[in-house]
Image (cartoon, rainbow, N blue to C red):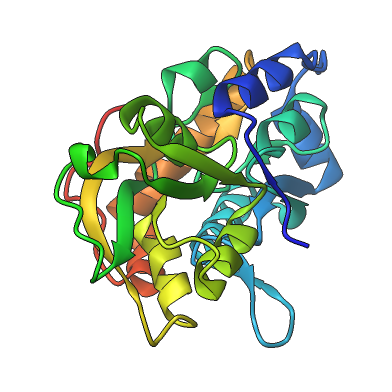
Length: 263
């Protein structure tokens, strides 16, 4: 049975903030001594993270994490997470960084630090052609499906205040609900809509309105200045040489902005 919950993203972040950050001397030194970068990645959020036909991790954030590991001169170890537990896994030391299309928000910045953005993601409302949505006013009284604890959840909650928000535990479950027709309107990313339409061919969704455009970045524990500087250098280098854009375009079919938005 598909699990859904009405727990808000704000509550999820409050719980995350309640988990004490580990007192680590220098995570960058630990990474290099260990010889591996433990990156928290959501493999249920195509095209950012998923599994290929051979059940191997793939996606734009998986490829980006490999670039970062190469930049640091270590191997990549993927720590599989879901959208709601990305930050708790980081705070409890189960991962060194989060690389999971983690949108930058003021709420999250109270709990963790962010490196410079290496990608962008839109928050859209999408529905089948037969449902007319031209503004937030058209969402009143409608049931909107989203993923709990994400910036999509936050925008749905704060902007569509007279709608019923149905929250799923991860993007994979959200996609399944939309494919099955359990829900017909979503607030999520265009990439999630594409994943739905690959399987919902008879009555595909289409983007109706854009609620927000968010930059996303690597998430780090607070106080990790050396690691943050190293990640920022990687972002600068691989944006300049086109490697990050090549990955983003391969999985999203569009280029990154010529100038990345400032968080």
